Length: 250
Image (tube, rainbow, N blue to C red; front, side):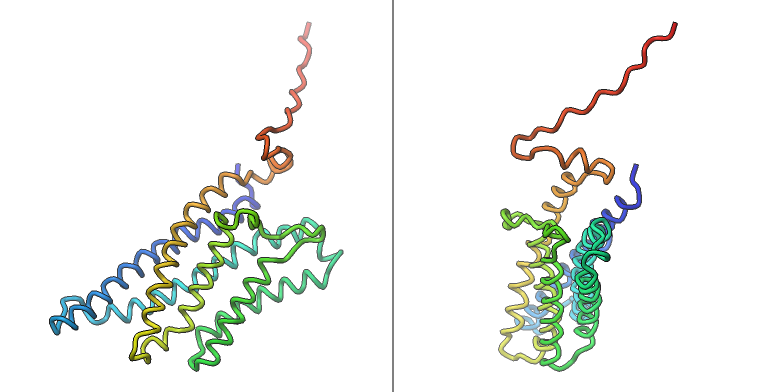
């Protein structure tokens, strides 16, 4: 039976599967059509692909970028606030707890301002602030010094957290350079955009794999005391206490 804590934990993967990954497919298709139209015009002078595909690619790509950063923040918010509550950080370290809350709000605000900024300087500033906010939030610890976010630091090359952060940074960068792409006649920004977003696509695929793996390792909240007492190295768990057997009546 899924209780509220388990449902909140599933909100991050649910939104990623239902909302984010369909948008990834749409953006990839439109990116291919946009490039194909550009090549058709360069070689034949015309293309059957409608010109609006480029504008739609940019618009939906902006939705994707914000969605990736938003889901990354959501994925960090659930374990962070859960541990803040469970460890009573509000009472033991109120300044730190307040700082974490303010950093979530500041990072969201920086992302909003990044969408609204038009000058290159401000786009760079707000993109940097958004990225710094993600890093700061991802490396916070609880009152015992244990990370608020499960990171797999010793296995960063297969870490859902590190892959997700890398994808979020690439999306922030894409938001920051959109206007520069159309003003660069040498297509250097466009080339960088294509290369980095091909890398982002690989990261999205890896997120589907590592996210599924991590879901298998997360027990229901009422099972946590027993499951977390298991030894992952020897792959053994303590033997459960057998239920009491009532003596036969009569």
